[in-house]
Length: 580
Image 1 (cartoon, rainbow, N blue to C red):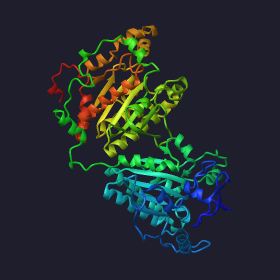
Image 2: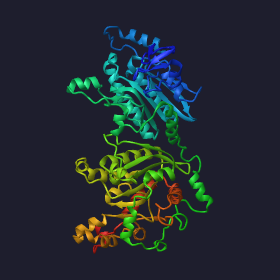
Image 3: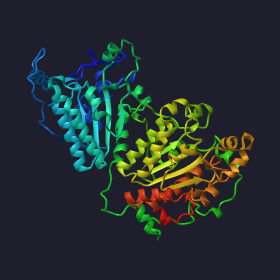
Image 4: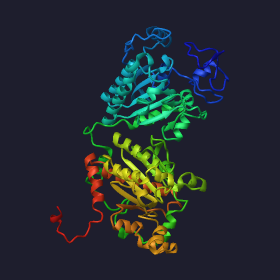
């Protein structure tokens, strides 16, 4: 019987799962992509097998064949380095620790660089750095996404500082993809450490990890010896990293093709100027001029058409737990929602959810504040109040939208930013300010919708948009009525009076231009008929994105900045020309 850890050229009759030790029939082990049926552990998979499992059959074209590492230092430990290279090539059938190919995944073009741990521990040497860079350059030249599949123990010691230089070399290649707006995705497999983890593996736009895959700079044994402490069993695993905001998605091998195909579809962008976009064609077919809003339709733009509501009653209804949440709308208004996690600095706030989706077939990036329907979910989601990690996550995901040229839709329902001590220690005010500034710079259409409670700067951080809509049952205010009553009336019982004074109803907000439009709700409100509310929101978003579609990136930024520049023109007795 053979251990599944061993790298064999022929499949044995039986193998042992490296995790639980269960005996698995060899052919079943290979058919299941070396995933144990008993415990779900993912065994090691070579580069060739990985390419066959992920890419469409018979379509992979090699890149960089013949690129090989050489013994630049004359390195000898127990064996000369050239002998180690020769053995690794004979054993794996590859020139070095990565194979690069052009191909497709479910029809979507991709350039893939797939590492093989069986070749000297997947170590990062000059050839690996050169091949990763060539793959990135091919993706850049062809404007197709780059897929990196990592498996490495770190930098290759036998190549000394030359190996170290590959971290900067590949980092520069990834930067060029960022500048050109080319999508990059990394699939982290076990293990991914050292110079690979600290370079291209961590620089991808989206990071997927296999269950249990370990990733880090220093290995567990080195850390334990250094700090003389025992680390938790889950340390550096995919699940550990996911909870701390460094991994977007954990995907089992049978799911990976579908997950990757959905992401690669986002990276397929038409060349500007080649043809008229579908949204523009729909506008032209309707006899409208691009960029011009119209009355009627799914969005009410005239405050006179809105029924007046008692502000305090509206506040209480906006907080109702039966109202659809952001995740409800992401599932009903959009299709193919794929949540992305983490702020890449150590946190993943559950009060903000973000990801990719499609609206009437149009790829978009969505961000929303999430409350919940049950007390346990409300507590887990901080009652929809985001921490600094949540706003950093929103910036990261909307930055990806800007890179790929995708519209952004934000759904806002929050009492405000989380007011805890830890949030203040992590710079809550600065993070909100940075998020607002970031939102003003996005060269893509941004549409925000107040779906429930819109509270203070915590709401504004996600509502700095080209068009700000509100559901008819939503509110938007500088402070909660209770907070206003406590400060100005010095009486919490004055909250109803404060609600009336704050002008937080959709009619008042539309009248003053804070909202650009109001989306009517079905009888009884959104919670009474969530399906009808979702359909109305879908139509409103589609129309609004159609209106913004013809605008260039520069025009969208200028439009957004002009929108907020108009608010609150100060009264002055000094002539304006004198101020200038």
